[in-house]
Image 1: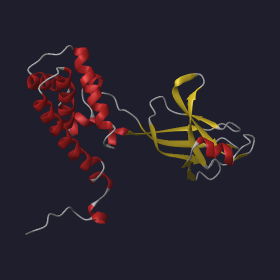
Image 2: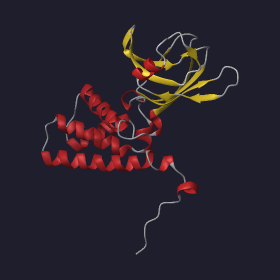
Image 3: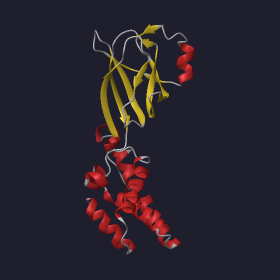
Image 4: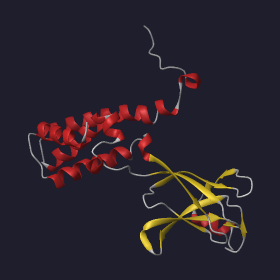
Length: 217
């Protein structure tokens, strides 16, 4: 289901034609609800970067939402060390002197950058004693179907996108409560099935976990 097909389906289901700007809001709101409910492959992204010697801060990507993992790579051996997530106050207490340097062991989300309050920054502990390459795996919002035409979600499991958008559209219409309830129920069912894929099947295999079995009666 591409963008045009989704718009046509929503208009057909609701028997209403919406301005493009409103339809795009319905779709993007539905996408964000879905992306925050299920960890599907299109939510994961990775980037590499570098620390700066004697600088305890590391800039986050501009589309960063949350961390899956952050590793520092030893400049001599190339060995990966995955940093442990802590609160800022832990790092401040464990390493009260920013001039105390060493190989980073911990990180925390420090807060908005002073030069851009819309962007976040990591604080590392201890302060890096050298330039370390870093590898960050993180959660972000993939490009919306509104601008991409097709997305992983629309190509692989469009029912959840359709019913999520219908919930937003019919709520906007202030439609009948029984119909809103129906769309919410269908959205919940589709979300459960997607969660089975994203948080279930894609995190295991038949060799380790065995194949799904239904009891025979």
